[in-house]
Image (cartoon, rainbow, N blue to C red):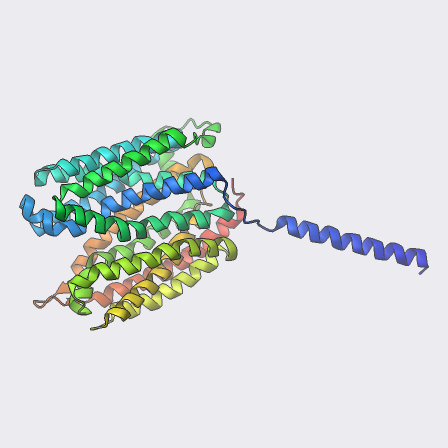
Length: 434
C-alpha cells in the first residue's frame, strides 16, 4: 500500500468514526429543561389535581363530624363516599365519546366548573339526601378531570419529559395529605364540616381563573377530523386491541391501593397499636416523603427508562406490602419508615406506568383513551373497596383479621400488571411519539 493510499484510508476511517459518533449522539434522547410556559402548565395541573384529590380525601376524616351532624349511619356514610367513585366512573365512560371533539382547555374548564358547583353543594348541604346528591354531582364532573389533565400532558410534553411531569403532578396527592387535610380539619373544628368544602371552592375558583386566562388552546388533535359519532368513537376506543393491555393494567394498578387504603388507619391503631393521636404525624411525615419522592421518581423515569423504574417499584412494593400487612404491634418509628418506603414503591409504579401508557393512544383518540382509563380506575377502585370489606373482619377488640390476605391479592395484581406493562412498554417504544 502506497503512502498516499495509507493516508487516504486513515482519513476515511477518521471521517467515518466522526460521522458515526455524530449520528449516535443525535439519536440520544435529550432531557431538556422546561420552558416558562411548560412550568406554568405543570404548576396549574398540579394545583388542579390537589383540589380534586383533597375533595375526595377530605370525606373520610370528616366522617366522625358529619355522621352525628346529619344523623347518618355508617352504612349510609359509606354510600356517600363510594357514590363519588361510581358516578366518576360512569362519567368517564360517557365523556370518552366526546373527549376528542373539543379543545381540551374548553373541556377542562367545563368539567372543572361542574366540579366547583358540586363541591359548593357539599358545602351548603343540610341533609343526608342533599349531600348524597352533591357527591354524585361532584363525581360526575371531578372524575373526568384527571383524564383530561393527562391528555393535556401527553399533548404538550414529549415522552422524555413526561416522567418528570407525572412525578410533579403526583406530588399533589402527598400535598393534599400533608397540607390540605390538616387545614381542612382545622377549619371544620373551628367552624363546622362545611368549611373545608368552601375552602376547596375558593382554591378551585382561583385555579379555574388562571386556566381560563393563561392556558393556551390545546386543539392539535382536532386537525384530523373524525366523522364518528360519540358513541361510535367510544366503542372504537374500547374495541381497539392495542389499548386492551393498558385498560387491564389501569384497573389492576387501582385494585391494590383501594383495598388497603380504607382500612389503613384502623390497622395502624388496632393491629400496630399506635395511638390515634399519632395518625396525623404518620400521615404527615409519609406525605412529606412522598412530596420529595415524586419528582425524584419522575427524573429517574426520564433518565433510566420508565419500565426499569416500574420493575424496581413493583419489586419494592411486593416486599413492603407483604411485610406491612403482616406486621404486629410496632413502634412509631418503624411504622413511619415502613409507610414511607412503601410509598417509594407505589410512586415508582404509578408515575412510570402513566408515562408509558401515555404513549399508547393515537392523538385523535387520546382523550377517549384517558377517559376510559380514568373510568376503569374509579370503578375498579370502588369494587376493590367492596371486596376488601367482605374479606376483612374486625373483632370485638377492634383488631383486623385477614388484612394480610389483601396484601397477597395486591402481590398478585402487581405481578400481573408487571407482565402487562412489559408489553405496553414494547408497544409504546415502537410508536412515534407525537
